[in-house]
Image 1 (cartoon, rainbow, N blue to C red):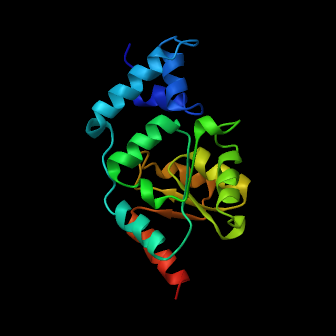
Image 2 (tube, one colour):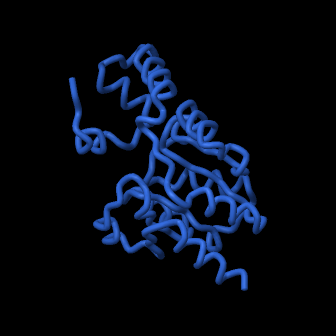
Image 3 (cartoon, rainbow, N blue to C red):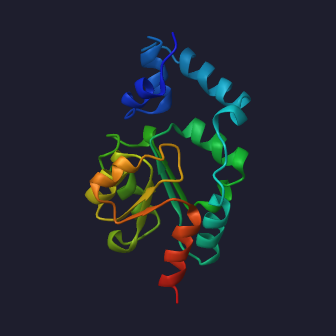
Length: 182
């Protein structure tokens, strides 16, 4: 069975491995998710293309001494593969994945857990995401919401959720952050 991007996006909420189990009807068997993770790791370059400038943004944040957390709806297994293959693992002070929260985004649970672990204040913290659930979770968590139009969705329709910022590339975000340190 082949699924379109739209069909897969409609399944977002549970982690990637749980979506795979559901779509291939292996609800009580980890075989499907194990095959998916192995396939993803082996064919990483076919699925993940580094975003131009993201390394500069993450490096800028780290060099300024800002605590950096990552909360993603993906599973920990796949997230660790991505971070390791891109060489970004060392940049994050905390990592929270979808399989470590009780409810998926737009519930703010993952953001709030990350904030607590790095002892950050909600009203001075940013959450960057590229889907509507990211903006909604940001608002529910009381953090500054950033719509990343540089990322996978690139969909300006999510501006209807009124993010605090929306950027077409990481350089624009660096400029805003840099101005706040002057």
